[in-house]
Image 1 (tube, one colour):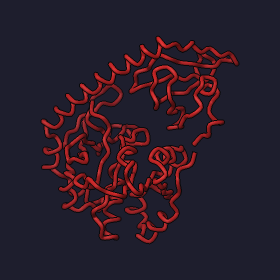
Image 2 (cartoon, rainbow, N blue to C red):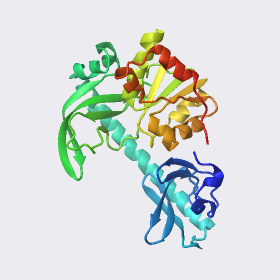
Image 3 (spheres, one colour):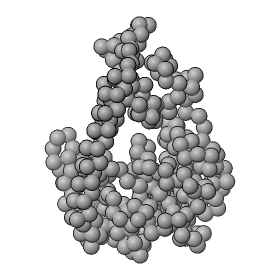
Image 4 (tube, rainbow, N blue to C red):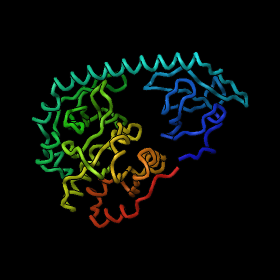
Length: 323
């Protein structure tokens, strides 16, 4: 996590003194123009500006304000009240359009009941290979799609896929991931959610609306495997394990975690290196604790034979987030 004095000059010279690094070349910071308090800024070197370049982005839509520094020359556009008012109106319009599109997509998804069709045709062998027995497969509505179509490099392809429905804490379906079994290329992202729906967190117990502890993992599969490992050894199934979509999408887990007594953040090892795990722990608050594991948690359980004693020892070394 970068400290304030380590922020790039392109931010400091524009009046931004607080920013969180979310990935290579991507920072979260307040925009001095559009008023967004957590904009994702893409920072890069440009041939045009001949130096570091940053631009505000909101869901892929830029507020058009950019600043840069080329060869020591500061070339910022003056910020006026008219600019702020204009982008506030644009932001409100964009938000209304996004919400309407999401509502339409959600209604279509729930009425189509795709997750039900896939659940009625499960691939028991795959899930049992992850030590997920049929009882939990049915509880989580895990399924199988023999002919999932997907886009890659502008071309439509097809693969069988295991399906992972995601339910909100009201037990209503909010999205679903297709995990491609035979992608056309190794670079293909195996996980394909429903288009036009917001990214969603997977919960081990969507029927459990009150919980004082929360475990947060990167990905539904890791959360599933870890939940069953913990429940089997502790004897406690009334616990909430959450799998957020990715390092770049927390899907509102920081808001869900706000009122918990303790939150355990269990990231992949690379998330410690990038600083993403610390950023999430800090966003959640002082009640969050970060667990550093030498490998991905599901790999430790399934491939390396991690014992429950080893699991507990890692949690005993939990730490708070670092800036």
